[in-house]
Image (tube, rainbow over all chains, first blue to last red; front, side, top):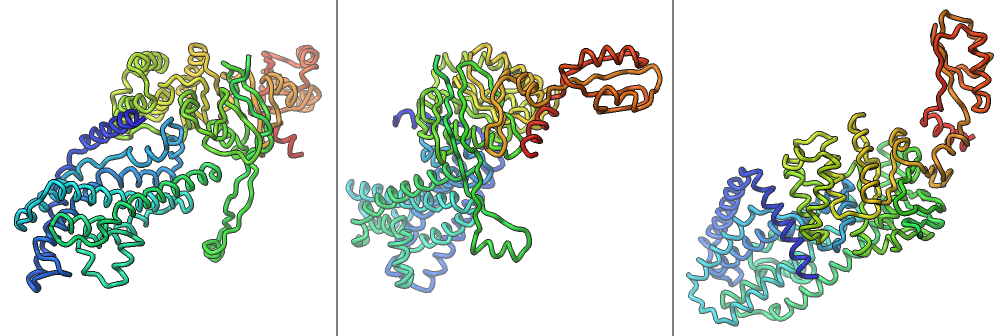
Length: 263
Length: 327
């Protein structure tokens, strides 16, 4: 089953590559966009730290590490997640989602792993570079366990993002036009550029328990920069598992509604 | 032999939001939607035997597409039963979905910017086709649909007809045993419609696939289906051979005359209902049973230069079916 799904995802990925190669201009546009985005973000951090030594208790190096993680995850999401899920929204509106449901493959899989925006690889690479450079300046010694913990936390963060986005996408089965969903998502997601400690109390709670962006950047960054890991580290896997389970259940519910209600 | 498609008292109701025109009423509908229940499919029963081609006829909104969606597993019914190849469609089992296809003239699955061949390769993976099987299917389809030139061009550069051919091929690579074709010739020019029709006939003859198709081009149904199922307002009105439909709803013949010189209209009207009358060309509709004697009398009494007797066009027959239902 897994092997078969991997083969299918591979076939879709190949097509995505070919599609992108058809528009080479996109490569340059994306690289320029990535660099500009990163430049402004680093500039913003630099401006803040010209006035202060620490930001919510985070040093410049630690904050840059966190920014690197943010850019990396942002690129990952833009490359592997949003294209497929956005496509679902379009397809439900246009009616071509029926073609997806006719395939002998679980609909959730096709909704999640069918489209890829290959050029966002530039964000992934740049994010990794920023993280690497910032960490080098921090003089933290990474143990094997530390790296493993970081990767695990990052995976939890990505899983949480997936769950949120899947749940928002599922709304399409009720409202059909949910283009604003991406905007809502981004509004919250962009708060992940800075450590959660900079936000006021109420927003911290919101970003931890309701729209758990804290687990996407702050928590992995705590682990990798040698800051005292907060108790959030230990509940990250729990939140991730609960979020993904809840989102997939919600998706199934939405899908069953779609197949019983549409004309 | 057991039926490939078995439908028993199938019912599908669904809710549609009633939106009235006008800004104020639209505004109100944001807060409170009024819903109306539509009986898209209303107690339909029929069977389709393996290898049969059945034409699904009905005006727009009659429930044809809903019925196809039920049978292909996209919708859950409100009530009733159906099996396709022994499976309950809406359980959407993998074995079921691997053996059927739903091709909709107005929906496309091909990658827009890539040659159709790339979509085919994706479908090969999706359906888990072995290389040999894939090559064999592809060979057959290229042959029947004349796809050689088409497959390597980006889909966006194809004409509507070429795209439909590629779309058909994409939907048939996995050699489905049951085909649901929803308006496969819609929007195509007459020549292309003809070619798609020829393809469906030949595909059916070659593979023995069972085909249920909807169309509102009568020529499609005429050419393809020996048996038709007519539905309107979700109800089944007729199920049987096409010729029976004509006998039952339009037992007429149309006699068309070319005259040597103009005659008084009432001289012609004596023979039957005048459908069309020019100076020298007149068409008269008569009862099928009397067509022969009327023809003989016409030849004797009118200055006939040429004469032909035809069955009424299918459009007219269908018109009669729905007209009679309303009156």
